[in-house]
Length: 264
Image (cartoon, rainbow, N blue to C red; front, side, top):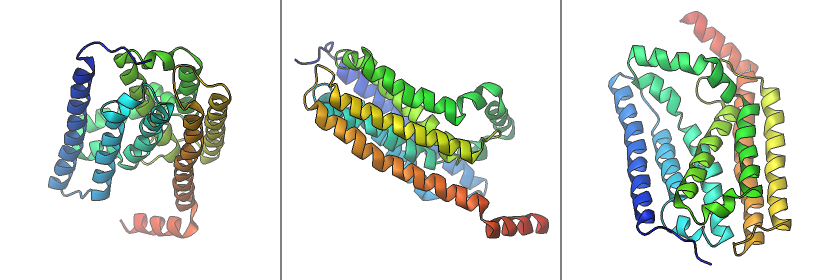
């Protein structure tokens, strides 16, 4: 059965996604140019990560992959991994908040810093809350009627993948912690939340393998892709998290940092 789309709705949504993609890349590149004009260099590899992450996220909701995702569960899971896991890792490593704080004028930068330190943002950015939004959202999508609705209503398809990108970014940022966080949680708690989230994602993949949702072809192959490919992305997050934890607790780095501060 083919998904029923309104005439022209797909092309309109593709156009909107394309415009949003160009705008996101242009805003980041503009921030880099402002930062460099201020004498603050910005690594080009972060620019590449941001551009690639935005394009990967856009490919999950527009283009051939998004079209195939309405019928093939393998394509659906490929889009899911792109939007909810691969793109967020790239976007977090691009450190957009740090770039914004560098590029903005003093008053907007201070307002952004106060917003980041506010209680609501601190609550949402906490690893436990971010995990509930990200992983809990996946369980609601695949165990409820949303997954079926995505196949027939383009706006729901875009909204769900938008949620995957934002929730995945929020969770990855909460775990990796590359951008400034005024109220950073303990790394031990973050590690526990990361392990539990990985387990919940794997259990959901196994549940989909054992109880395939109706309306899709090759569901079990898609569930296997979710399990194994997702594990590789999760391994990357674990490596980055552990590397940053090690660097933060390395006595040599801490002594060098202290000496630099005293010299300054």
